[in-house]
Length: 515
Image 1 (cartoon, rainbow, N blue to C red):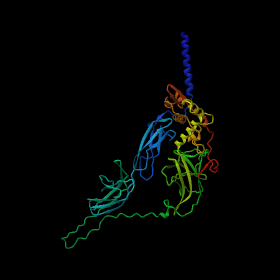
Image 2 (image 1 turned 180 degrees about the vertical axis):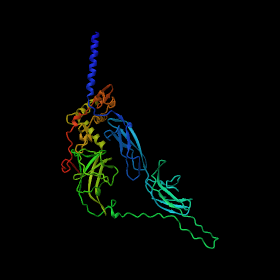
Image 3 (image 1 turned 30 degrees about the horizontal axis):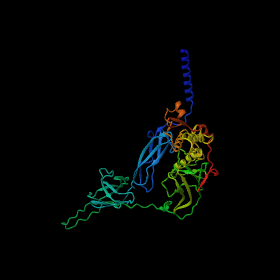
Image 4 (image 1 turned 120 degrees about the horizontal axis):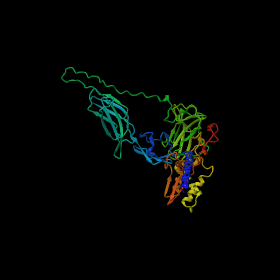
């Protein structure tokens, strides 16, 4: 009896060792679940200046030195408006591997003020500041007898039309330094612009005349130096960007998408656009989206390339967001709102700008497109008489069909981004990993409804442990006392490629022409 018991213990021990050895060989493709509050979140700016446009600072999220990807690892939501003076909130909502919500704030300040003229008198001065008619409640002026404005006195003038400020009680023959700024009152709180550049003036000296003297004392010449009027720079020497000119266009311009799917453009996705043109100078033209619409942002890849299959040429210039390729340029753009955007190609000359071509881009809402994709799959794989579990079984079977989904593109065991075969949006490219796939399964479950709990297994076990390797890509769905596990992540090998094929910009057959 003792021998049998001892034998059973040995067998159990051997089985545990074998299980550990087997699990330790499992490959690791995703990270443990992390609350976004534990990441490092940085806004591109926390203080912006009112410019009559919507302004949303860019968000950069890193965790342990790794830069996280928006839409894949987190979602960004801004307060409504983001145009007028005030305080706004940015929500960073974890997605997939990352959970929780973090908040950052930024402010939009009133327009910056400027000193236009200073008129000095014996014991007074009159200061004229540039009038601001929008988002300005009034002005402030600070002044002192030292250039660093230590112990400066401050005057506040209410009303944006009162742009003339009077200084009294000054000392004669003294140099005063001054700065101005605007302010705006919003819900009882004052917001101030940045201080302007420093201006200065010297008050006049007192006259020493006397009525009892037979010979009047001559009035001394004021020692104050008048503020010189700046000589304007002749605009004829430089191309005029702010007015329409008369010169005809010299070059042709077209816009192409680089992906083989010839997909639409979606909000919040970085889109590389090929600008096919015979113009050799990237500084002589520009792309104007809806008259410089603030709902778009242009990017330059710099030393860290966005896409691995775009062969760039001579991109030392930092004066333009365009990057040179054979036959034209690449412009990376991201749209923050769906809609129709009119793109003007403007060539610049001494007489002004000429619209060489106009292209219309239709931008689709990412969230709406993804939701429509989810609902379409639910409708074609399920029926009304199915239980929630049966619906999820049917959906999972559809997503797991051979050849439907591939893992993210991988080259030499590293994930790569190809403009010709991008990884996103996943509902267009049909590529995802062990982070995105369970997140999307959870979205399916929410639309199906009827579940008491939707549990993502990220973070349940230490990273790299045998249990984590088995469970990290699984979603557990519960109704009552019954729990079922669902997973649709493809094998990592399905995303492997043997080489990175560079895009041939002389062959437009695999590209989509816009407009």
